Length: 65
Length: 264
Image 1 (cartoon, one colour):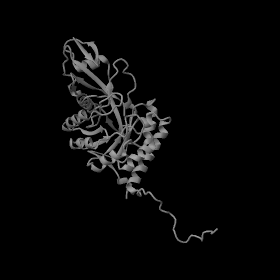
Image 2: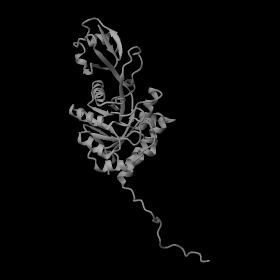
Image 3: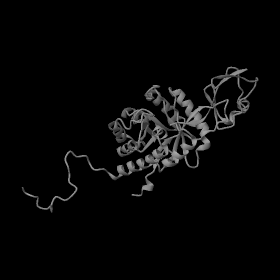
Image 4: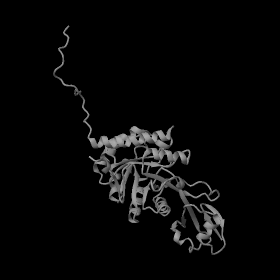
């Protein structure tokens, strides 16, 4: 299946969870995930199953005023 | 008066420094650290942005911000709709496990002026979701009152456009906002140098938030130190009660006892 992550398409095996995606991306720092414009909080990463066409935003903290 | 007790209360938070400093635009994380330390601030703002998916070994700013020393205030910079600002506020809360947010809903890319309608909508929603909202706005006293009524913990009128360095452009509006306000008023945006901060505090502002004025100064650490003095000077001067402005002179030395003037 294909999902969009931070505006870019990404292929994932069917049944992959948000946690699987983060693992695939190798992201370990502080981050937050939004799935289809809804916050997907950390405790739910492992059991939120992604579907074809899902749109994700993975964000972190940067400098700003 | 015990100046140690002159604290700034913002919802559940309490601070002795009234200077809030942003973390953007520094040429390095190390310089940012030095500038923040020189400023004496206790609150620093940060932004929420997409994680780099292909270079995630890059250093994260959080490694350079001591959270035992600074309370991080996430902003919703770069959001041009209430919906986006609300989404970013929720993401910021998830990232930092803090219930407060510096809310910005912008209306224009060139001026970065706030969108008043989106700002009010987002304030109402975020307050309902339990956020402590510090809201960036323009210097319109009517808008300030509406945001206060909507439950904002602090209303933050801009001195001038973000990053413009012009200082307090309309002190009369800021004064009106201060006179009518029941919540802390923090002047946010447009501060260029130390005297701008002092002027804001002398008007009676409860605090000042700045970023570019320090980060883009030729010597950010020196400027941060100047801002530290400026905010203290302005606050003390405000509390001390200034003399009124008069048209005519009022001599400082006694009028009697002068020697006889030379008569020609």
